[in-house]
Figure 1 (tube, helix red, strand yellow):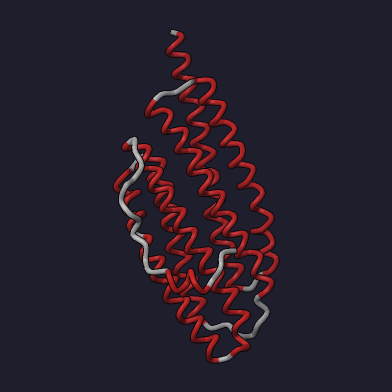
Figure 2 (spheres, helix red, strand yellow; figure 1 turned 30 degrees about the vertical axis):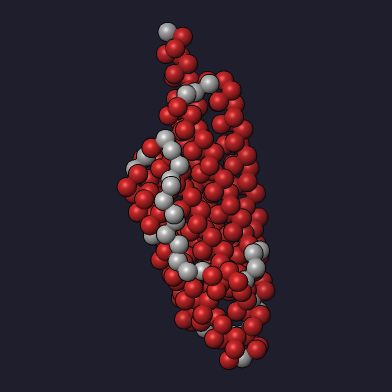
Length: 238
């Protein structure tokens, strides 16, 4: 009976961790949508709301980490059960970082005061953000369902995000060379594009966490990354 009670208590702890991760996922997805929306519409107030909302994600991530450590100490789970808890902590960390990247975009909205607003660039950025948001939703569903094939589909899809980012980078360079007055605006957009590309990297991280939870080992395959060398050289990290 004591074992049954312990197992039931552990299940409840795990359910609460999973619930909080799902809540974080919903908040992170909203942050992506609103940060890009604020950027496209140059909505400074919405950009500031995205910046302020990041605190909620940070608090949730800390709570998940504290609960996870407490559960490990209390229940002393083994093997697959321990992987569940470690997986929740890892996913929460990635979601918190996605929130930070959305916040970085929100902060840049007020700097886009130029009349220069090329539709092709904005549409490219919008498309990349939409793709990344879709990847994050899919990988969170895969995490909740322990669906390894779905997680691996997201893992393999990161190359497409990189390709769009590289294409945007080339467009931005062209606009900057055509008219030096465009440089400031284009550099801000470069950083925003890089932030979105990094969100895609975190979706890939979560896919690798699903692999670890299901298979009990780390992925050995190299990541299917697109060629980002030119971008990495020209744009220092935030």
